[in-house]
Image 1 (spheres, chains in turn cyan, green):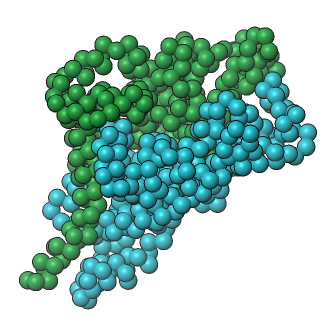
Image 2 (cartoon, helix red, strand yellow; image 1 turned 30 degrees about the horizontal axis):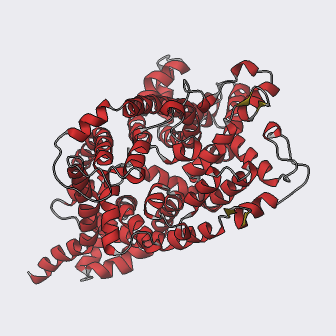
Length: 284
Length: 299
């Protein structure tokens, strides 16, 4: 008996029915977000929220983006998030790569303990550091600014980026490094000529991970960016959704805009996204 | 000799900035928060005179905090069990040589890419119960349409449900992640093991319980750690979806901490909530990290 026939013993139809039912559950919010965003203001009614739109109307998106009577749109928040996320992602990736390189290929006494101590930083509830963080950022002149948020995301991104790169470099044979050492290469030379050229997949995984978590962060954003001019998109969307004068279809359109960049990354680089996720759960 | 020294020092210098950053911004700050929780700093201007355990006494006597702790337990248990059950079910079914496996997998996993704020906004409207006068909305309306009207509830607007409705949205977001972890694990179990069990006369259900489930135990443990610390920290989702709710029925310690600290400027009180949160996460994480470290040392 082959593996194929063995695995097909479970009743096929039932399996597909369950899988499709769950797919419907996961897609349900997207369906509502999309159809509501595309409805005209005349069509929008909570009591007909599952009905398909009659035509394509982009009014809700326009209002969510540019704002309307009595409320701001989320366009400036969107760009704040871009200015915040891109530099923070790049810097964290570089730091993670250096740390991962040292902690996997240049181990010293106590380096594994040090690594574990670093890792603890990715699990802590950030509430337990917010009070001094605000004080220190204030003293550094970084409180309430985008550079301040970048700094915070880089610092608290160190554990996860180090973890992913360390595990990634662990798969590069140590013999390669040893051979280069014997040839007289320095620590920098080995990084530049041996490790770095192999690092692309690691960089992609880390950058996707950091891009997604920084883009989606709310706690740091709402604590550090009280000033509306620099608020990132999650805060902007929350303000939009928390306002009583903003129609719910505009909120749905705003949510869709906020979700779009990370969803696009997921769609086009899903494979790497998965790898980051699995790395984030340590190695089990 | 010189070279050997350089070889030892340069790696340390390279990671020093990160090590210092974590030492200050994680460990130092945690220490400072712990210290603040024993002070009288309960107004805007800092006051570091010691208050002993007073902040903790006030906190444990506080009704909102008691409700929050209960909510957190309910949320964590529901969230963990549902994510593990759904994640395992989906992974197990997807492992049965399914046509369109990639598509299904992508659909189950995409909510992970979205922020809790987006999830909260969407689910706030999906679980908006509507009203008796105006009719049902959201999921309730869907139940009406397909003849399951008896399933209608007030969701998060009903204080008896409260946080459990938030758990539905959280499960929607995170269960696909568990699916991905289990699927990776199932793919790692060699077919020969199942085959051998069959030769010994085990039924498919017996194989599932006595071969597959035990082999996946490390993944279950990893999932519990990851989901557990997310559950204890849950904050954004509640902000966007419900707020503290009627009678604090949707409130959690993380939310209470932010309110106390940054709305009411009661810093010492907020620090005490943060410290309790940290201790709870620590109880979950520290043994796991210690275990991973030891396992690594053995390799």
